[in-house]
View 1: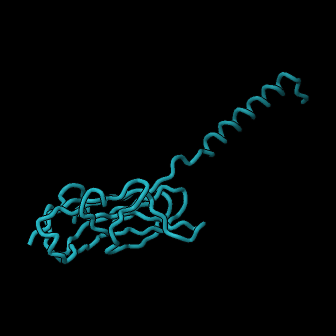
View 2: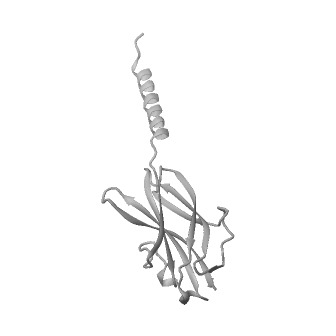
View 3: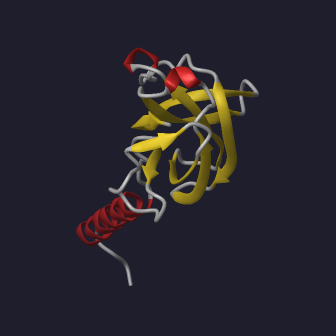
Length: 163
C-alpha cells in the first residue's frame, strides 16, 4: 500500500510528538545539588537536647547526613566548641575553633545516614558557668583537588557548662 503525503505527514508528526514526550519523561535535569547535616538528640529525634554539661562529660548525640550531589561523596563531620557567637561557622567559612573530633563516612546520591556521636566537653575550668556551642561542621572531599572542602552547612547547640 502506498501512503499519500497527508497520511505520511500525520504519521511523521505522531512519531515526533511521541519521541518528544519520551525524551521529556526520561531526561530530566538533576536540579540543585546540596548536602545536609542535622543534629538530633540521643534518641535520634529532633527536640530534647541537653541544656547543661559538666567539664569532661561525654554527651551522646545523633548526627544526620544527607547527600543530594548527583554522585557519591566522602564526608567528614568535625566537632568543635565555640566559646561565643563570633566563633560559629557561616555558610562561607568554618568555625575558627580547633577541631576536637571527627567522623568519616561515604554516601551514595540521595542517601542519608545517622550515627551516634559521643562528644566531650573540654576540661577547662574557665568554661564553668559559661554558655558554649557544640558545633558539628560537614566537610566534603573534593576529588578534583584531592582535599576536604567545607560545605557551608553545620549544626550546633548551646549548653551551659556546670561543675
